[in-house]
Length: 428
Ligand code: SAH
Ligand code: SF4
Image: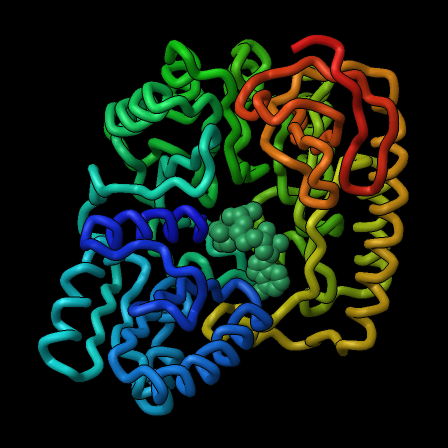
């Protein structure tokens, strides 16, 4: 989501006459688009700001702007005002579109410009987006989140759910297809609650049906799906529509009912397992990935065992695993029974070892199967090979021609690693 916001920022800057610099030292303006979901990301930003302060001393005309989720938090904005006075512009998540005006103000006033809105007023349509990739595009379908999971800062920095009008989404995707894009990833913190703020309601299934009908579009992905809002109607829609990829990112967060309740996730372990069963029955080849947090306040060894059991039971294709991290202002940060770091670390190590075993086993099961894959470009690890993606969102490395980029090829899987498959071309 933030990367897509960066595409928007880059588009606005290009419209203003800027072009991409080779590196920090060549830049006239540096925009930091920040994330505050976990503390490590925040610490990196402060480290970078420190280095940029030195650069600014050498290049006083350099404009430094900071936006994104970190700026949206009051204590961070105060810190920037007081301790990082050389940051020229501070803007938030709800007024990205104001950046060009804020740059003008900073140039005129020669003092720190701060503009942070508490809520998004209207959804800004028609902004220029500089797409970083040639044939896959991100398309926001909604902003914000209403769920208030007790560990999560997102609702506080991204505001309440606001869905884009379906006509605007369809128009954007049609334009993308006209410009050669063949895959879209629909973005929202909880895409399953798309349209709940409309009257009459157009839900996510209805939107998918409309998008699936767009001529020339080959693949549709979406994230993130919240388990509590995954309706039977949506499962049937996904199963029936031919362009929807066979991959669902379905964050479970924990396998313990006690912890799920404390997290305010709105489902039980049993609900989740039932949902997985329904999805796998309707979409047999689906790949499932998830997010898991370990060390949430009050998580006992038994609660953690419940998570381990659930992972063994579901056998996710892969998982993003996180150590619980206190976020100022969220209910969980004030909960008692915070878990010591040593326990959190030992739990995450166990979890990662188990998931790696499962991921390897699942990748092994792919050998000798065939997949229609979208070719993305040279492999990141071996420039002589090409990299493509299955509908199930697995990377396949294969010997192929650079001209294949952006097209669908049929590959037979010949080998595997932890995070990729190896394949050979059957037909182009
Ligand atoms: N909207 C998405 C995810 C948003 S944040 C969803 O509901 O699934 C991405 C992931 O970061 C979350 O799924 C969660 O696993 C993790 N996360 C969020 N807050 C966290 C925290 N305080 N500590 C550790 N992990 C966190
Ligand atoms: Fe955060 Fe929960 Fe909203 Fe996801 S659904 S963004 S985890 S509050």
